[in-house]
Length: 131
Image (cartoon, rainbow, N blue to C red; front, side):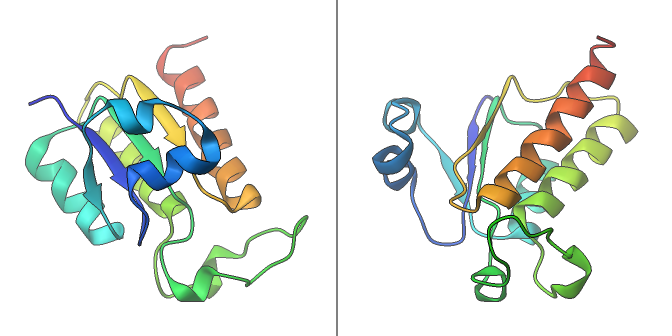
């Protein structure tokens, strides 16, 4: 089953279009998941999506918990973030010898968290494709 996955605690893909201006959010059909557990369960049940778009902050405790330029201390959170979802996905792909998504998008409004997710996948794809 081919599908695209949109991870965000409250927004919809058309909302991400409004500030990213990426037409993909309006042109593609998306399955929406709202938290870490939904993300994991959907992927386990339906396999790896073609495209995943990540939000970083998936709960109220993540909002305004750091300033621009700060480092995020993930150990302080009870609720898992989009970064945690990305780490789980990479481990799941490696452990099960699966093909990664064709495309990773980040629509998070948290620049630090978004960059953390981006770096995680940049390093993973270098490893995966042995660049």
